[in-house]
Length: 166
Length: 100
Image (cartoon, rainbow over all chains, first blue to last red):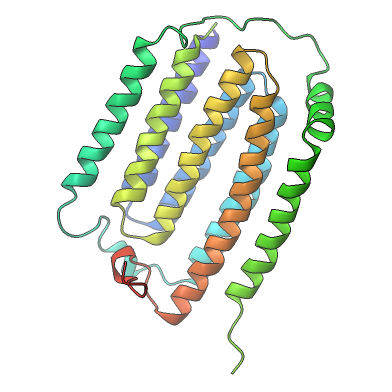
């Protein structure tokens, strides 16, 4: 049951990710990325992380994708449709990608650390409560730093996108 | 029950596809979207390991990764709008102002 759902969501996410990379039109890429994020949030539900699944949908599908579509709307993308890939020889990049993928797969499949089939301990309820207690007690300083980074990014984005005063 | 290495292999596949998008595509917008895909595949690994080793820190790190990603996208799209206004190009190979 679980395995069937995992295979379904994983296959859908890989197909949509390939669509993202191969699509000619940036709008199609953005929609494929949105579909891919939905599949990944379903995989988070399978991993018993419902809070992360909801955050994934809110932040990525809700906020980031709308931002991308707004920028696509603001900018004329018609001339960028003509050529998908970088001109010239892409052979070094392809070799690098193949080496990276094969290396990671070999490491994963040959190591016995990844072979565990069951979680080491089954959780009882109240998971979100424990998670938030850990986040706001043990990780309070990183949390505050992240909020300061978000504020700085907000101000920086406004300053960067503003028209220069003449 | 799904074994752990299935999730890790899914993360590897999505990471390689995203890296292909970053390295090969010509449109800056699609490069940024592929970057999002890279960070998302890392999140799958964080949460899978946190689930299988019964540790909350996986989920907490994933929350921080999502927050930093949101900040990064806001700044990157601001830079993109300024670039499109000043140079009126979206092609990665035509942005050579810094002689890189």
